Image (tube, rainbow, N blue to C red; front, top):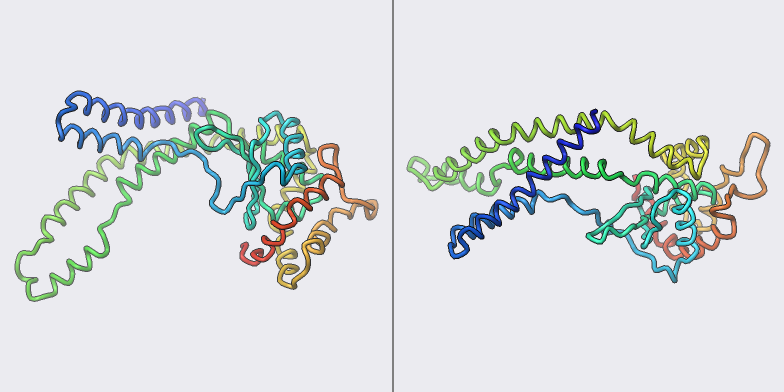
Length: 326
């Protein structure tokens, strides 16, 4: 019931956004020869455009890898995607200092893109790399989750526009200087500005109340469904990994791997030495020390090593900035 309520409220928010665009177009088409109609209609359309759902885009620091330069990485990503049951990534990008690996559909074409965070990827053995890809695919939002998330972003934009505006600092400083000068006792041009600002803030409070209420309700409804969302993601990831393997990845991703590789990078160690030190913990088991790193049918030892060769230049560049990760 809460899931349906969240979806209905989110759809109403999106319908309101569409309503601004339609209303603006109607105002213009009703009297296309009127300058006033174009001005008013353009403002209404601009409001709808400002409140539109934002499409996911690649982060500014992400570098897209060509398939020809990283065939093994593309192959491993596609095998895991097939096992999970999602579309194969059309593009794979890497980020030097981001620890998260994520998969999403981006842009107007909804292109499936996999973005790999190099610090964590460098510190994992082949088997855990496959698990990492599986968890990234499993976190792909469903249709209703995406609709609700986009509505929350729209409501946040509404809140900032109606309640977040503040008088310009430069204008306030100029006003204070005028008031402190010899002209301060006389009427000065700030009166109209201050009155307009007062009415603007008043309108913001009047219309901002329903926006705050809608955002509060939708946030509560979305949080009520978080446990169900996490359970769904967990079930999808288990198509590739067992529960202990997922728990192990979560433990590593919590940050325990980061300090040792940062220290190694500061000591000037090579990429190979940093990786060997990072994955050494995975050789230790209750029965002793493994002769090779854990691997799986989705990503074997040889394939993982060839991926490292493909990413060698990116690793070398990334480790120079590892000290900046917090």
